[in-house]
Image 1 (cartoon, rainbow, N blue to C red):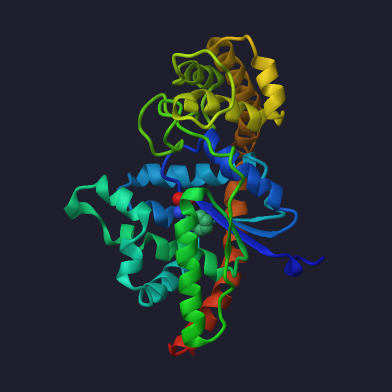
Image 2: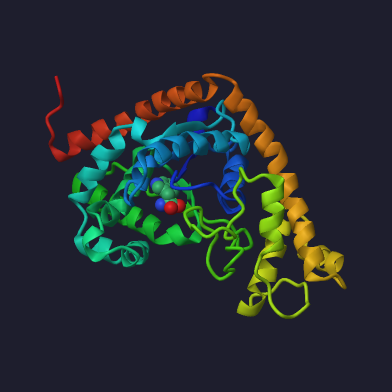
Length: 337
Ligand code: TRP
């Protein structure tokens, strides 16, 4: 099969914090698994991070770090296209065009906008936050992606992307592929260690919330030892809110070891929460150690990351500009001579 016959996948992560084991288990390792069967584009969505206040130096450093962590996680730059969103100006241009086709009601309805806006002072909610899904739609539609691996919390944004694509196709003729969300089976959803009822987040400030991919083994172990559990003693998988902490620890263990739920429960039968936390800590360290070694290696190789990103941007620009030219033509913009 030639590269062009493969279906296309696109996804991205915001460089607005430290990537966590949740990002690895819920996203990155899925991406790695897809890179042979699909023509993959993985971007670091730095422009999305601007929707909330960022320190410039921090944003710059995190953007490169996230790209390096894509590679350290096993995404192969020879197979997948890795790039920084802002290196492809077509994203912002298409986002503008799409925003002109978007009824405000569609945007006000987005639960992520409502959640994020509620956490801000009313006057400081930026227009970019409202338009966040439009930029995400542009990311996806520019590449004519068939499938978009995302977490369940992004389902609504994907539906919005499809609605927009459909509206555009209806108004101007078949232009965009309608993308499908590719949502990993339950179990891959990692929750906060300090609050197992909320998804583990890279932008949560509290110390014991998440294990970062670049945490030292000592820090990772310590965070797991402090994970919230419950006052019981049963080490079993379960959906009930009281068991959410234990369930989360077992889910992490399951994701890393690949063992079946039954085998894991049998393994921990008769043991205490202290043993559980210790063993999950060791499993996490066994995940982080090789990943961090690869990260250090590629950061030490002067210019390597920049080369990958330059090459990725070139490829991404080629594909994106082709779609954008078609869009500009459809909607009546004069082609530059
Ligand atoms: N909104 C996504 C998230 O928070 C990040 C994102 C931006 C994205 N653009 C994208 C994901 C395009 C998939 C495709 O997870």
